[in-house]
Length: 198
Image (cartoon, rainbow, N blue to C red; front, side):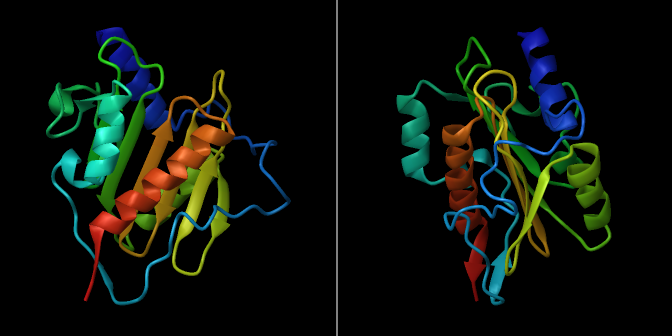
């Protein structure tokens, strides 16, 4: 289990991209994440969650359970924050990283992170996502997305959603079009829960 934890830790910290690359399988010259990831009206307020069970809706938790995925890592996970060898970048900013997966393998696991994002922290995060990890960038009305579709063999689907004051990331270990679509849906669900309207 410890070696498997080390592997997932490296994926989270290195962004699963061994060298900066642009995903050649992305649709169009300047793709934009689908409308499932919504942008925030100006009157929305971010509230940092403290528990993994608070970042996804009950319907998603039921779906994870039906798929045999258990909460392995995170503040309320089976192994708590000790699941990863080192804190994730989001945890280093005061956020949470939650990992659901089969209890005996990391195949088809999903990592969801939420962190507060200040103006001072943002440049380093953007540089890591765009330069160090070589993720694609799309700019929406209120959010900026750093993403990679990945594939079903070696590269996970990765989606980062940056707002003025938060960072939401989803990593699906099985990438490709379906994996990326699932990451988009998860990010939208998380976003809906961590923001409230004034």
